[in-house]
Image (cartoon, rainbow, N blue to C red; front, side, top):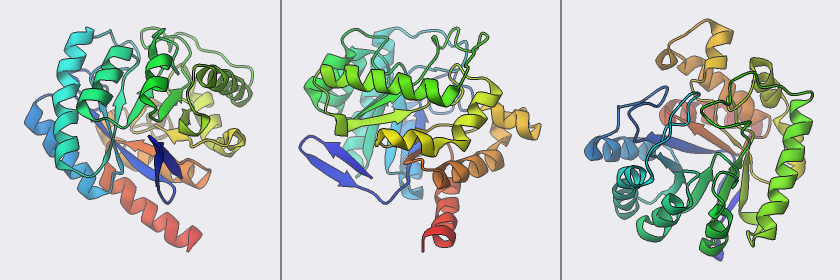
Length: 278
């Protein structure tokens, strides 16, 4: 997989691990754990040493029902952490935001390399222009609705077909705004306006999304549909389920795995590579 950075690119053996760094008090799995500057930097270091190629920094929870965060508060949360990680470690940083100002400052002042937008450039009218101007990779995620209402009776006739149509439209829009196609990553948005059966269908059919010829990011770490399968309701206890589902996703064609526990993901990918690809 190649991630194009400015006029150069970084090439990885697929898949790569994106470590989640939530600087939020209310994220569904790790809310409040890394809200202090020191704890955030320490956790980023642990994830990097464990095998993360990308650190995804977020300052606003996007769990179902989450409320919005003031833009200045979000900037205050993420910018010092991004700056410090960029100075201290050799790792790519993505900024998890749908706000154009947060994205722009994170890249221009903090040194972030990737913009990860859950709205696929739709929540902010200026985000596409910002991404094009900054010339950085962007993650376009599928979401039905907003974090406040996305899980209120979502419905699909054919989730894979509808995702494909959605991404084709969003890719056309991005390119029309000056974003280079080779800088686009797609994320089907597991748990973002999806029913239990939709999440399962997406994971089983990741290979069908590869027809778009773009890297595919999968973010399923500790999510509730895994607990529905196993009966484990506490997200902290869903690590076995997460590892299993990530390995299946990687085997089905995922390029980037977005996870909380980088070490367990890295270890499982080594086994997958040895058994499947060596």
